[in-house]
Image (cartoon, rainbow, N blue to C red; front, side):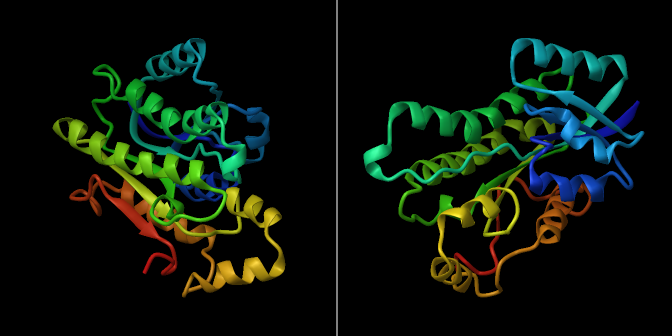
Length: 240
């Protein structure tokens, strides 16, 4: 049986850099709710693609794929995320549910599925992407901040619950990188606001390789075997 790394939210811009790096030496299963054809330029014999919208049918297809090809999932990297700017006057139960559905429950859902007894025998590491917003408030992002803070605490609880299976669970508390949601954020800020944001990062904005290096470390069960339940801060000094 071959070991595979499972990436959830594989068509995100942040995931792209990791896919390029991991695919050199690893087998990957790439999941995305979007058209997986977007990831075709990574097409590689050691990569499997599956459109995954968390429906019962999608879950059955994923489980069937794993069993049919006799795959061992050794690590899960969860990239799915949603960011929006909502002032108090625009907050609603609908927006609350939408934010938590993507930022929290999508993580809960894949962990619940992949840690079932018949799938988790070789699973050793789970990593999800959080944000400095989970530990520092700002105008207009109360729902986003709250959802990422919740995600941090889900990670801590899951780490304790899954320790008996020797599965480590960690999050990366990410500062600003001009990719993915970070790039989308810049659309809402003028030049002065962007400069102020950069000044809050003593080491400047991060790069894709800063994130990929950290993920590689956390999914390496030799180098990070004693690390679990950690909200790993990667922010260029933003929270210092």
